[in-house]
Length: 275
Image (cartoon, rainbow, N blue to C red; front, side):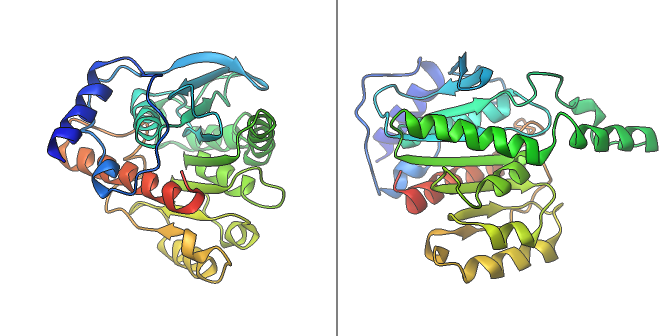
């Protein structure tokens, strides 16, 4: 087992993406143990136009065309930490992961500007959510992107998102969703109403900074859904952003939580949509 794990770590951290391996469905728990993450990381994927987006980060093997996962980044856009997570999921599940640039017509929110401190900064953030980052508008863009993938032969389609992206994911998991399972990580704008409208299994993973009462209400809703046995929930003892752009992977605790989170998401998709 340890020989196999060392081989996986070596391949992910020191080689280009492989397109030669066959897709596998492995229930061995050791294969869901992600390789150690790196603080100085070079993403493995490439950028290209896809669907209605001019720029999409794409990572993973070419041959498994019937399964795919879409990632909705947080308000900070493309960051190595978020892309490293996508690379890990792609490698472990042997699927392509697509990360569209939802902010391609503007600019993502600057990391140094979060959290907003002044009233002016807070208003700018609200304007950002009401404009370029509008959840309803981007929900439609995400659904359309999912439909493009389904039209091209993808049969099992998942989606996950962080912060603002988690809200977009929740909205896209309702009626006529093209996705077979969705997951949200330290999600912003939690609302039990979104859970009530959900039509597909959900993996929900908040941090200490999300409203606990709303999270608990959403879990109670999930427990009553017909897909409750395929859903998953776990609160992470960390800060908002620990698994995406704000992750400090030089910090041992953050690094450990980052690894745990991606292992959990991988197991969720394996259970919920047979990845």
